[in-house]
Image (cartoon, rainbow, N blue to C red; front, top):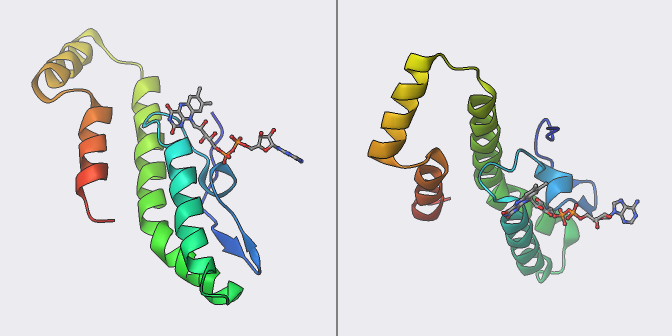
Amino acid sequence: METVSAPVLAKGRIAFIGDASHGCATSLQQGAAQALEDSIVLSDFLDSGNILIALQKYTSARMKKISWVMEKSNNCMKIFNKKLTNLEKIDRNEKIKAEGLNSFILWQKLFNDDF
Ligand SMILES: Cc1cc2nc3c(=O)[nH]c(=O)nc-3n(C[C@H](O)[C@H](O)[C@H](O)COP(=O)(O)OP(=O)(O)OC[C@H]3O[C@@H](n4cnc5c(N)ncnc54)[C@H](O)[C@@H]3O)c2cc1C
């Protein structure tokens, strides 16, 4: 699956939101959610009237969270694609039984951490 190599939220007077900015693996089911968050945050800053300052603020406000989502989503996909030995499959299954699916753990972090 293709992903954006690095998130870009603004270039000159152009703003990027959603997949155009940070398209990545769908493992955390966050693409549409993050696109909506982008548009809400951007519209709040655009209210100030100065486009360049609004785009700077938008970039600072969103970069940490979308970089985290991209990294974790792409890592999940790498793990899915890894060929496992039978022993590794047993280990993985035990880990899921004990801790839950990786995406659930990451959702909890996403909703609880202060981005
Ligand atoms: C299989 C799959 C499952 C997913 N599951 C989830 C999920 O459960 N939860 C979640 O939050 N996200 C999920 N996503 C991710 C989510 O669909 C995307 O991140 C989201 O749709 C991105 O929205 P967007 O508006 O940025 O881009 P898009 O939805 O891709 O919208 C871009 C639009 O621009 C149009 N367009 C392109 N080029 C032009 C042009 N030159 N002129 C005019 N129009 C153009 C396209 O036709 C399209 O309608 C999933 C994605 C996939 C592929």
